[in-house]
Image (cartoon, rainbow, N blue to C red; front, top):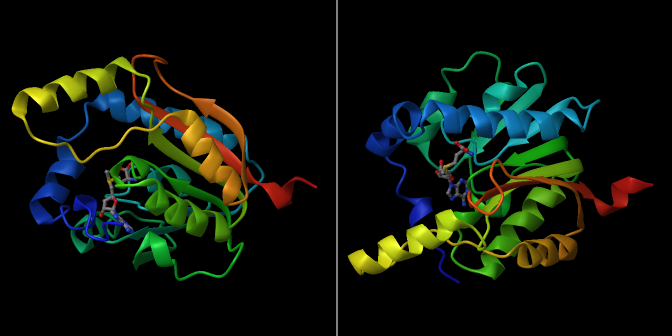
Amino acid sequence: MDPDYPARSKYDRAVAENYATTRFAPRVDRRERQIVGALAASCEPFQTVLDAPCGTGRMTGLFLSKRVTALDLSPAMLEHVKRVDGVAEVHEGDIENLPFPDGHFDLVVSVRFLHHLPDESTVERCLSELSRVSGGHVLVSYFDTFALQNLRRWFKQRRRERPGHRRSRPWRVIAAIARRVGLEPVARRCSAPGVSEQWFVLFRKAAARA
Ligand SMILES: C[S@@+](CC[C@H](N)C(=O)[O-])C[C@H]1O[C@@H](n2cnc3c(N)ncnc32)[C@H](O)[C@@H]1O
């Protein structure tokens, strides 16, 4: 276990500013928000949402017609979310220890986070917390191993002789961890399967099926 993986500390004021402005090409941002919006729509009716980590609020903004709570470890990222009107609660906190009771939210969203985690036990601890506070669904994204984008990143990192911090994982690994923390897959989407490494998965709490 590496409790100090880079994503815990790298989002300072300068990185947050970049993240909120130029980090994403508009078409990439739009596509990701479309996929998350469509998967979330399939969970209707629902009222309460947790977006964690919310970052600068890219996904939080999709849920302003609901009661949406935003959580992140980085105060600099949260400064941006605080400027968004209509967010019910903003928390500075750690996904490994969420300050909410079991089953508190109808939908829990966690985008662009799992690939920052250094090992499978950390993924399991985080997914377990996200699952614990959901009474219905959990929507996450992860980086899939079997994608051209991943291969390209691997070559780039080798050329620079610098280890990267992002971790891609095969779907079977993510699915097995999810099963252990009480989540079963409902739908999986990718904007360009085999090319794009980012996949979005909607899970439901196994106990919520009956
Ligand atoms: C790549 S950003 C993703 C933000 C947002 N979900 C999005 O898609 O734009 C990753 C975020 O994870 C946050 N983070 C990293 N480790 C965390 C942890 N253990 N608990 C809560 N937030 C964490 C960082 O502060 C950063 O804002």
